[in-house]
Each structure stands twice: as C-alpha cells, then as structure tokens.
Length: 435
Image 1 (cartoon, rainbow, N blue to C red):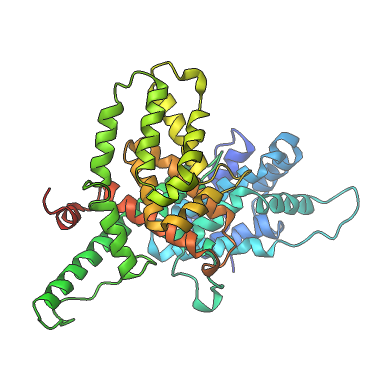
Image 2 (image 1 turned 135 degrees about the horizontal axis):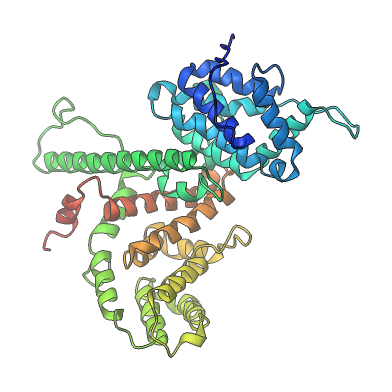
C-alpha cells in the first residue's frame, strides 16, 4: 500500500523527541485512512525500516540512544498506540482497525544478531519486544478485545477463555485496562467505552426483566404468547433465567429479617455514624457481616475467623473515634481477607470457601451489602475482582465457571443498585411491593 508523503511545510512541536512523535501520529491519524496509518505504524515500529519521515527516525534514535528514555519506551509506544485507538474508537466504521493495530505486534521479527553492536533497526525491534512483554500491551489487548467485539471474523476467534469475556465486565476496566502511567488518551478511551457498556447492560437488563414480567402475566392469565406482540428479549447475562431471577430478588428484594440490602446498609450507617471508638465500630461491622452468613457455616468456623481478623485490625486505634479514612482502610482490609489480597499474594481460599458453603448469590450479596454502606468502597471491590480476573485470565470459561458466575452477579448487583442512566425503580416495586 502506498502511504502519502507528508507535507514538508507541516511543522510539529519539537519540545522533545516523544512529543514530536506524538504530534506526527496525531496528524497522520487525522488526515489519512486507517489502512495508511496502520501501514505507517507497521513500517515504523514492526519492520523498523523504510519509513518516509527522517525527522521521526531521528526522534526515535534519540529516544533509544538515551538510557533514561529507552527505559520509558514501553510507555512511549503505549501512548503512540492510544493516539490511534482514541481516534478510531469514535466510529463503529473504524473500530475494527484497533484489532488490526494490535495484530501488528504478532509479526515483530526476531533478531538474529548475536554481536555486541546492533543496528538501529535491531535496537528498535528490541524495544518493541519490551513493550510486548509489558503490562501496557496486556491492557491494550484487553481494550482491543472490548472495542473490537464482533469485528473479528468468526474463524479467527479462539477457544473461549475467561480473558475473552472482558467486554462483559466494565467495572473491571479501571484496573484491567488502565495502570500507572496510562496516557490521557488511554483514560479517555477506557472511560468512554466503560460508560457505554454499562449503559448498554443496564438497558438490556431492564428490557429483559420487563419482557419476562409481561410473559409471566400472559401465562398467569392463560393468554397465548405472540412474539409479534411481545418481542422476545435475550438474557443479557451468562446466568440462567432462574439464577438471574434469584439474584435480582436477593439484591433488590427482601434479603434478611424482612429488609433489603439497601435498607440494612442505611440502618448500619445511621447506627455507626457517631460511634464512640474504633473497637465498637469493628464490633458493629463484624455483626453486620456475620448476620449475612448462613447459620451453620458461620457457627462452624467462619464467624470465629472473621472476628479474629477484625480484632487484629489497627488495635492502636481501638479507643479513638474512627474517621472516614480509618473506616475505609478497615473495609479494604476486610475485602482483602474475604476475596483476595493482591496480585503478589492471590490467595482466595476464603472466597472459595464462602461460595462452596453459601453459593455465589449469597456470597456476592455480602460484598454488595458492604459497598452499599458507602459508594466510595465500590472501587475497592472492583479491584479485588480485577485481581482474580487477571489470575484466571488464561483459564477456559468452563474451567473457572464459579468466577464467571461471580463476575456476572457483581454486574447485576451493581446495575440494579448503582445505575444512574436507567430507571430501575420498577424492580423495587416488583420485589418490595409493600414499601
């Protein structure tokens, strides 16, 4: 493919090598077709030869020749990619090119040079391979999977693994698609896609529940169900209709002692708002959680272990009035204990134990009950599930179905309790008719 010569009169900001490179790519993506831009990208970073702009070569040479700059090359290349992604994601007609862009990295030639002196081309390819081995590339592939959903030809799709389901869980994006050093372009793209997918899921869930209600009413009245009158709506989750129904009833309707999770959370917040000291707050929070644990399972050992966990949290503050920062740290530590601590220590036996004894619906209900006490806690819960998602990303969907069900139910719980784009109040009228 022929790529046009850029005008020699076109001037870019040359305040730094990286900035000239960014301005150059931004100009190209605005003025050329996606095919031409991908051809440019391929010559510049993949083949690392045959590029038509000498100034760009000089900028790259300066970056690679500077030890400090070369260490930051994965970040620089990440920014270059997102300048293109940010432009193409705006239109459905160009979103498929994001997948093509990521596919370019499959063809980086391996260096056969074994000497001490390497050519510029070999050095540049080596830097690109560093990018491929970085978290930036992993995040970029996930983003391409989300934006390019449906754009990949069926014969190119691989066996369904957990990682391919990333497009279903926008609440993971802040942690799975962004990281330290994410560019402004990357953040803008991720936030836009995240909000679009959240709205899409909320809308589809609302439509599906409404459809199910209409069908149920027809059956109850003994009337025939005519698809020409009531248009069928597909279940937007990977849960069965029965499992989804149980989840909705649990997360919206009466959950414990005649109250919904929202009502219980409001009561807890009011009760602990002026708590005298941190020890009392911990005791109250322990009771708040343990009330949601199935009786036999809790009495066997869970409640005892949970109580010991609470007692070990920040004992130096026990006699002091807790501020919001200390309360938030406490919630965070409890999420670490109940779900998973960190990527470095991905132990999640407590979470697995809860699911084995209580099921996914009740277990996710415990976490939802905690988040409902303060929406500021939502990112902490999202972070825990992003760690599990990363840990099981290469597993087959069937091999980690317990996690898939959990992720789906977190999605449902967030949608019916935190949606600000779709009116879910009809669910409250359905599951809490006397309120």
